[in-house]
Amino acid sequence: MIGFILFVIGAVFGSFLNVVIYRLPRKMSIVNPPSHCPVCGERIKPYDNIPILSYIILRGRCRNCGAMISPRYTIVESIVAFSFLFGYLRFGLGVEYIGFVLLTLLLVPIAFIDLDVMLIPDSIAIPGIVIGLLVGIFRGFVVQSFLGGVAGASTILFFYYVGKLIYKREAMGLGDVRIGALIGAFTGWAGWLISLVIAAFLGSIYGILLVRIKGGDLKNEIPFGPFLAMGGYAVYIWGSSILKLFQI
Ligand SMILES: [Zn+2]
Image 1 (tube, rainbow, N blue to C red):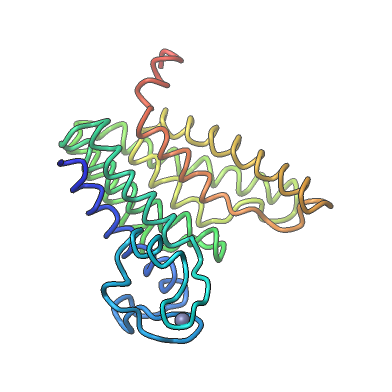
Image 2 (image 1 turned 180 degrees about the vertical axis):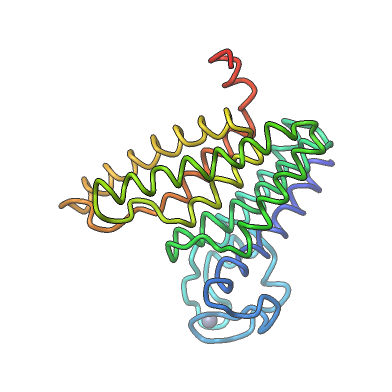
């Protein structure tokens, strides 16, 4: 029952994050105007704006004009809803859980905004670093958390300058420095390094698939934020087991 309630709360938060992901990079107000269909402009009725459910009931179409609505919104809502539920099953209700929920609410908009516009939003990432350090204090993890933040920022900075030297272009955005610091603050320095390895691994697979499918070489930069987010997310959940594996 608690799990179900948390799932619903997560879906509602996910719905709000959809608005943030769409409007923040466009510098639009988060509260106004209310949600509307991007095709016909019809305002979406409250009963058609229920996270996840409405999409299924309306079979992904606008009630007014029948235009297809991107499944993205429902995907984001599901990620957050399942995270709220899964975190509860993994950590129970406590400071670890609150940390996990906060990490989800920070990483989901950062990853999707980076995916859309190749930009890490400062207004989420910088408060996110502070939140990560605060969670570290409450988890009795303060030194690790601080070192993690420093390690996260400095490794990305290192790759940024090395990339510039070797490839004469920016292989990595400076925005990634902030997301590195954020993930490090949440996972500690050892956790950060594992996050980075996971991110590099997933990013390479994505890059190879992209070349295979689209052909040619990788002219377009791949946003690294979503992969870092996935790495940090996995490490927060399974980090203690992974670290035991390497006996760190
Ligand atoms: Zn419509």
